[in-house]
Image 1: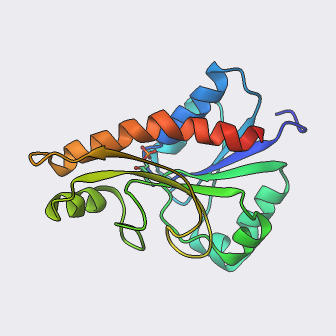
Image 2: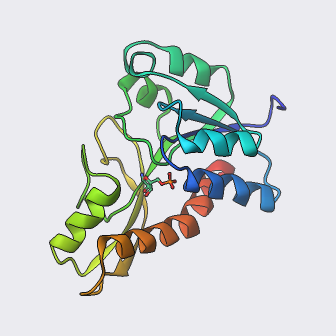
Length: 192
Ligand code: GRF
């Protein structure tokens, strides 16, 4: 990897569809960036996708993330322009937030401040939205601070939840919005 090209560090512990969309977007549009993918799950599908895309990876446990500087030191060796949480569930510790002010962003699959906070992720969010007969849901892209799903909003996009929509249908609509908007937001922040 060329050293002077800035890095985007993606934290992900799930399937990694957003991570793939972001990396593909940069490649398709010839935007120079280095990527690395960090995961707290050694068997996360996102790590397999990273290997296929020839992206370096780093996996870590809770101690190395929240109790010592292992993850921070890994990042500090790189010229990090942006840190992107894309399906990462752990609270980001103070040492990371303080070292990367307004450089860490997260995507949440609902219209925050609704349906956010510890334990609100994946299908739990969409099931709650349907159970509460919400008329709309959507996505929120926001800066990360020391609280779950709390920092300043960067972008929200919404869609109608129809009376017959199931949580799976809501999940699908959320994913379509995520894939449409997240890569562009990452590009904008990376290039600014
Ligand atoms: C997305 O729905 C995102 O909003 C949430 O976790 C999910 C990650 O999906 N934070 P994927 O792993 O990128 O497919």
